Amino acid sequence: MEKKLAENYLKIIEAVGEDPNREGLLDTPKRAAKAMEYLTKGYRQTLQEITNNAVFSSDADDMVLVQDIELYSMCEHHLLPFVGRCHIAYIPNGKVLGLSKFARIVDMFARRFQIQEQLTHQIAEAVQEVTNAKGVGVIVEAKHMCMMMRGVEKQNSKMRTSVMLGNFREDPKTRNEFLQLVKG
Image 1 (spheres, rainbow, N blue to C red):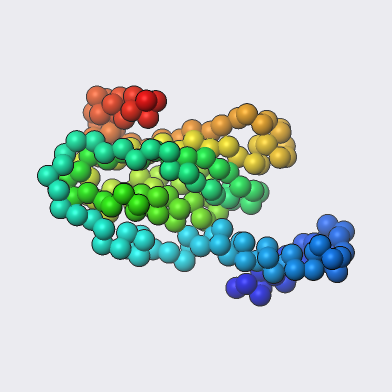
Image 2: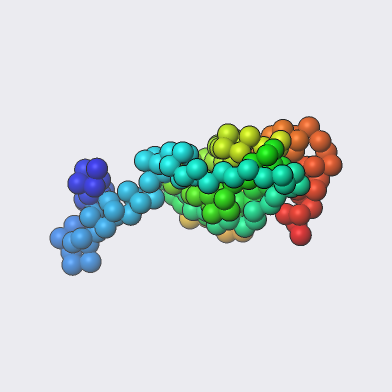
């Protein structure tokens, strides 16, 4: 994969009119290939691998919130980054998930070519699948380089998306508690 990516980056460098033999660009195709491989590693991960059986029995039945999980993804429309944070809440149903696994779930889906709307759904559905929670709420807020670096060039725009499953969708009190905690 890395060799093919490097060959394509070389072609891109040439296509924009640069000299790939210039000192600063000599190893760029190889470095860019390694970076792209890393930035898309989510395609080569599974939910079972990253959660690694870190689901534990628990009597807890109050809302659990993991807030401000940093995320870095790439817009599938322009292959430009979007960066932001994710807030995940769930109401356990006899099981809790190890804390670091929330960040791993976010990273697995973010490390794919994405749109933010789909990313938010994938995270919520994965948490639901792993925990069998009574409800899951996910909010993602991000700044998109495709809005900042090109096109309309709006530096302060931010996009927020949310997905509510189970109790978070059906019960306004649960949803409001989640939203108030995130504002916190």
